[in-house]
Image 1 (cartoon, rainbow, N blue to C red):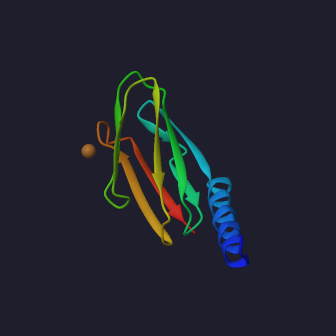
Image 2: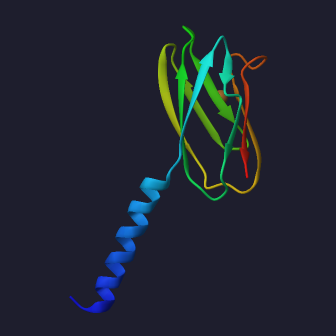
Length: 109
Ligand SMILES: [Cu+2]
């Protein structure tokens, strides 16, 4: 195998494995129609995996216009949202079924 191809494969492999290893995972509880934590800090320009654990018996729908995400999580179950890479800023999200209490924010630094 020639050197350029070896170099290409090496770069491909290391970037793939880095992106898998480096992806932060953040766990968020939904309890009594509140998010714990309600504010989440993540690094800029990074893909992040959010796992929502809905501890309530009722379903909740995670909604964010700023993040362009929407996902229903049935009661007593969990759901995953991938967000990013994002620019520095604040990205609110809320529970569409209980919006008076279920309010959260992603803070990108
Ligand atoms: Cu919705």
